[in-house]
Image (cartoon, rainbow, N blue to C red; front, top):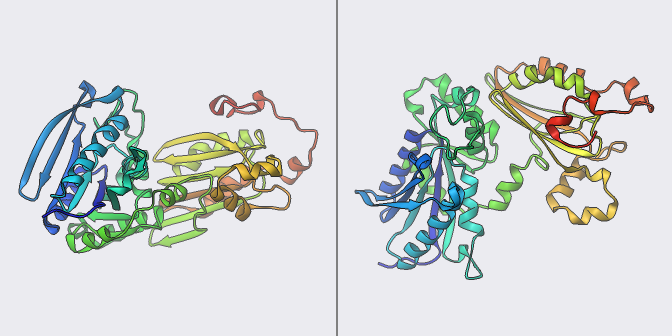
Length: 394
């Protein structure tokens, strides 16, 4: 029987392959007429991508796909979207389950399935993404968020220049979707189940945390995944994380201050600050770069810092109309009568996180009142250990 358009699609991602495969199988067996699409990237280093289609009875098709421009993202976009459009037009399948590869982040798939234009028309004319689900193995979550392994170490790199860490990939897979399916929780002890759920809930408060079973998964399919909302929610320049949250030994704290950080003192404290939690993210203000918003992104032992354009307080009023509504709203919430939207907004999540010690370290890195009052102080590249990393003028 022919099915109506737009066809239903659900994206299932996750670093933990067994957990992800379990979620896919649950959906295939719960929804008659469901078809799973998976791009196998195990041989991507040799330029080989295999597309596998399967239903509840097993594999339906296996085809080799050419790697486009040596780019996995390009290949997924240029193969997946036309494939699903063709299948949707045939109307023979009731649900498409797009199963990502271990190291693929769900955002690129979700945006390809919603923002692509086909003959000038949005792809949503034919496809409706009901949910993006990340599957997580309960017993592996904390260890993989804390690991120092690179994706290459696990043989999960999706390109020769893929220098991402395992913790970084897993954190982004967890923080983007609006549903997180926990696999293996029944086999774990109560403390491990609670810890896993608490970590997921604090890393992504917007997501439903559900068991990886069909009874909990099927209701998710009736929803509608909003890619714009997901992008805004995970954007460190606009996010407004909760001030503090605690569930057992899992704690989250957001450090907010309205004085700039001293570059040398912060640089000296980086190891202690990054090691304090499993995950930290946000925006910050460095005294040596007073007009530039800086983004902080740390997972495991890896830290990335980068400029994100000017603080709105550094721009003329007319320029406010040129930034997004979300950026203006965040600036309004952060606004201080002296510093404007310049602020420290860093959120830390960890197991056994020593909040008082962390806050004390961060506070010690701020400029003192005396340093703030010293108008003769001028920062040079020699004074700024971040100058070369950030590659912006001091």
